[in-house]
Image (cartoon, rainbow, N blue to C red; front, side, top):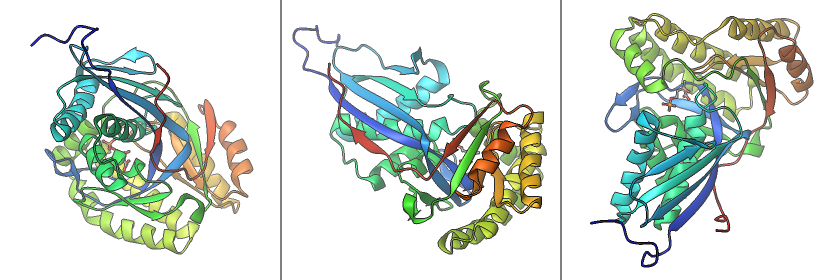
Length: 335
Ligand code: PMV
C-alpha cells in the first residue's frame, strides 16, 4: 500500500526523551545470550549528568522508510539497522505500522568509547515508547533498551545502577545524591572507535584464552564493588573498578586478532592517576571500548585531578561529571 498523501494522513505520533550516559565501574563484557542480548557478567555503573542525548521520535504515516539523524548526520548501514530493530519492537508491541523519523543530539562525541550507545538507546527507547503510547515505566524501558545495547538498560536509571548476569533489566542501587562522587572524563581523541563493542565482545568470547578467567572473576569483583558502594568506601570501590577494567582489557588483548583500545594518551592518563594516588589523592581510573580515561574521585580532590589530567600529554579535553538522573520524557518540540 502506498504511503498516505499529505492531506489525508493523520498527524505524526511524537515522543521526546533525554537520557544520560553511564560509565561502568564494574564492566559488562560478553553475552550470555546473543539473540536476546543478555549479559554474561554482572555490571555496576554510574549515570553521569554532563554526558547526555536528546532524541525525538515521530511515527509518521507520510514516511516511506525509517530515517535517523544523529547530530545532523543521516544514519545508514548497521547504525540505522540497530535503530530500526528497536523501532520494530515498539511497532510490534503497539501494532503501529508507520515508519519513523528519529532525530538525536549528543552533548559529546558519538561512538568514541564515551557510552553514546547507552544514552542513545535509552533515549530512543523512551521517546519511541512514548510516541507509540506504550508503557514507559523504567522497568519496561530498561528491558527494551537492553535488547539494543545492554549498557543502555543502565542509563534508564540515575545514580548507581546494577545489571545482573543474564538479567533482562537494570536496577538502581543508589540514587544520584546518595553518594556525591565525581567522575572526571579525560578525552584523549575524538576519532570514531576502530571496532564496535558487540563485535569486540564476540571476538573476545570466541578466541581469547583469558575470556573464561574474565567471566570467572567478574562476579567477585561485582560483589566487592556493590558492597563498597553501599558502604560508601571509595578505596575498595576504586580497587575493584581498576581490576575490572584491566581484566576486561586483558581478555581483549589476548583475542585473535587482538583488540587494543588504549593509546599512548590512555597510558599517560593512567600514569597520572597512579601518581596522584601515590601522593595521597583518592583517584581511580576506568577505560571502556575507546581510548578515553574516566577518573572516579571525591569532590574535594576534583580540582587537583582535573588540573593534572589537563596537563597530561594527549589529553584533549576534560569534562567533570557528577551522578546524573535517569531517562526522562521531554515536551515535544513545537512543529
Ligand atoms: O552495551 P554495549 O554494547 O555498548 O557495551 C558496553 C561495553 C563497555 O562499555 C565496555 C562496558 C560497560 O559495561 O558499559
